Image (cartoon, rainbow, N blue to C red):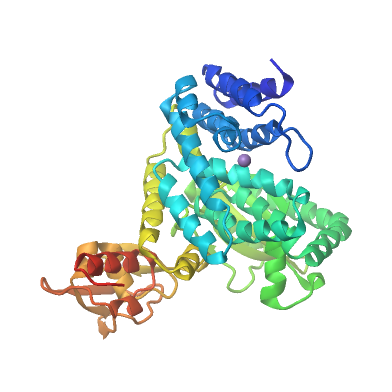
Amino acid sequence: MDAALKEIIDTFKCYNPNQDTALIENAYVFAQKAHEGQKRLSGEPFFTHAVEVAKILLDHKLDKETIAAALLHDTVEDTTATVKDIEKNFDKEVADMVAGLTKMDRLENTSTDEETVQNWRKMLIAVSHDMRIILIKLADRTHNMKTLDALPPQRRQEKALETINLYAPLAQRLGMFGLKNELEDLSFKYLHPQEYLQIKEGIAQKAENLEKRLDAFKTALNGVLEKEEIPHRLLARVKNHYSIFRKIKKQGVPFDQIQDLLGVRIITDTVLDCYRALGALHANFKPAANSFTDYIAMPKMNMYQSIHTTVFFESSLIEVQIRTEEMHRTCEYGIAAHWRYKQGAKADPHLDEKLNWIRQWIEWQRDLTAPREFLESFQTDINLNQIFIFTPKGEVKVLPEHSTPLDFAYLVHTEIGDHYIGALVNGKMAKMGSELKSGDICEIQTRKNAEPKPQWLEAAKTARARSKIKTYLRNKGMEL
Ligand code: MN
């Protein structure tokens, strides 16, 4: 067994000690042979790319079928192997993944912006039956971004732009925050080289200082939490370069004046202890105004859960996130956690629900015919703040900011949306296109014979509502 294969098997065995690894070993040998003699633009043997992609997925503890498919992912596109060969040598599950990835590759290489976006949507829909294909694609892109220097400058720019506009938001949507940060920083380096360097050097200069301050804060915080007997461990980090860049742009201040470069995480055992930790934190360190958000009580759509707050420490600001071990795992692995637990006893019923939610969301994109509309929905639905709207019975529904009563109606049920005639917001009549605010109580009035009209598209802001309205109108034979 060669060294790279041994490393792959050893890593896999760390989280799946009792599984047979023949599938991975065979995939390795098959792909190595298929790519024999091929070189990447960087001059490296082509097969090293497949190995690196598999390693990224091993970091996310994916199942053996995914690791095998990762090793094989370029064999059909770039060698004489066919999907049939893969199916014969392995199984249908692996062959389907490789076929999906080949399809994505062929759609990817296009010219205009418009086409890129169209194809991107087709790609997602084509593979959404098995989200592992998308995870392999994300790992593939991550490794390609790491070796981007080998491409001519024009191609570097295109790839970086596509990565920051499409792949990073996708990773975010799938709840894979580690990958998202990495993809952002890798693109940022090529899109804004000067600013990237400035931030990188700025952090390096301050490193010693930042470290000292972080240690002092951690010591103080440890004391506070121990006194309250709250079980915890602390993690600390300097924020990713791109998020600092975004802050500089948003606040319109130079790097030197960015206050909260540091982030600290308190990881504890239970939800109750999250709130106890928050209490202890705010009782001892003054919180900055308007910095508090509770994503535990109100989880984000991409399965993110944490309490966020920013506190003063020795005249500087430190962002603190509080979460349980389980929430922390979900933040690290995102939907990948689904396959991690698939064989084990510790299946998380919420993960199925989350997975369905993502599939549904991809499905809604089908009807957004204008590329611009698709791109906007893709980026804004997650980046926008969320608002929480109550049904008359007190049930809470999560919508993106700027949503309207019509969006709310479609979120509750398609039938409610399709038969919409009016809405009461906090007991008062409201227009179907008026903007809802967090905390609003929204009651939808319906009538059996009411039906969607083309002008409803102006009132609907979410991908879901727009998609449902368009489907209805098309079924009635209307051209859109
Ligand atoms: Mn590849």
